[in-house]
Every structure is written in structure tokens, then in C-alpha cells.
Image (tube, rainbow, N blue to C red; front, side, top):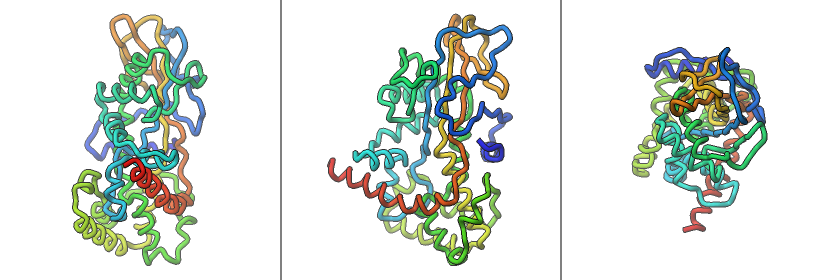
Length: 341
């Protein structure tokens, strides 16, 4: 993960009133397997048996984040997490509302909820879990799924990576893809090469007070969007569009760039690797220089390492590509629902 992006994630997290220094995990870029990229153990510690790892794709637990969503799609999009819509459209099947509970449980940070989500997802690898590894080789499922789910859940509950990720995702995205299309059509950007101006930025930016006000007008929680009647949605949407169109070019560009940063955060993978220790040692958090340790009982302890991969900054060309694909995906997933009904 680019250092500037990591720092901006931390800035967002700290702004929510949280405390504690940010200890970046062992970080890589688009690696197919990081199960062998171990941080050091303690001087008197040793591991035994094979290492295993689970890869999570925690794509935005919040389904939509903006009043700018097209009214004709707002009701549908407020029901499902984006990854559910994307997978359903790609695989030609009905999106599953259960994914909502899965991702909400994962981001909750509560040990029991995280364990339930991981355990349920391990079998079919259709929820947050997308890959399992044993000794660096991909495998369908760990030998002991219940134990693996407990270890992974304990590691995630101990670290704050999921909470930080969620805060950063929410902080950087107030537009949704529908809002991106509206922003690009703003009069001040019509004759501007937006992609060229955004291409070489690598981290989110602090918005001006005017842009922050527009951000608040545009942002909407999924629950509120779903509960609001169509006419009221349209009123909110018109207000948001009007507010966007009053922004100066630099403010619009900053909002679009922050959306690209949010897209990066939505697409990362988190890989949790673990190995059983020969002698139980006290629990500890992972640091930049040493693996973390969790104790399941007095006699059993596991060393773990949490890594972030696939965190390369998104190209500004993604703006128009995502707009083009959005209608296809939502229409395809909605059509599958009609067929199933």
C-alpha cells in the first residue's frame, strides 16, 4: 500500500476520535500468495506444523453512500452490498441479501460476529473469504475450518485494520458511481481533461470547507436511502446535484480523486497467515517488525501476520469505465431477481 495512502487512512481514523498509533502491517502489492512473507518471531519462539492463510475481500460493507444514486436504481442498490451485485451480474444469478449481514458482521469487529462470518464463508468461499492457502498452496478449505475461523477472527478482533478500512472507505466516498457521472458532467469540467489532471495523484486530499459542505449534502447511509420515499429521494438528489454544480473546478477534482482512493480501498485484499507455536507465549499485537500472537487456551498459541495486498492506486481512467459498467451490472443483477421471482 502506498505510504501516503496508509497515512491518509490513519488520518481519517484519528479524526473519528480514536486513539493509538498506526502500526502498518507487512505490506505488499498485488501478490498472489503472501503466506511465506513472514515477520520475525520472538527470539525464544518457534513454530511447528504447516502455515495456513485466508484471503478476505472486504468490499464496502456500506451498500451505497450518496443521495446522487439514480432514483430508478436507488431502491435496488440500497438492498445489497456492491460485491453482491457485481458477482450476481457476472455469474448470472440472483444477488443474495445474506451478504449484507455477512459484511456487516465482518466489519463489526466483534469476535463472535467475525468468527461466524469467517466460518460460514470458508465452506463456499462466496462471502468475504475468497481463497485459502496451506503451505503456500491454494486449497479448498482448511483441515479444521472451525479452528481456522477462530484463529482468523481472534487476529482480526485484536487488530484494528477492518475498523480503519471502513472509516477510510466512508470518508473518501460520498459520490457513489452515479455521483461520479454527475460530477464529470458539471459545467466547470466539461472542457477539462479530468483524467490527465488526476492521473499522478496517489493519496486522498483534504477538502476545502466548501467541498466538505457539498460532501455532507451528497452523503447518505443505505438505511436512510432505503427508508426514504421516492419523491423525497428526488428532492435530496436535486439538492446534491445543485450543490455539486456550484463547486469550483479544484473542489470537484478533489472529490473525484477521493472517490478513486475509496475505490482502491474497496478493492484491497487482506491476508491473515498463522502458524502454531511450539510453546505458548503471552498474546501480543502485530507490529511492523514482529508477528502477533493469540492464545486460544493455556496450552495453545498461534503466531499470525496480517498483510494488505492489491492496493495499487486506481487509474483515473476508472472513472469513465466504472460509469459505463454500472448500468450493465445493476440491470443484470436486477434482471436475475425478476427471473427468480
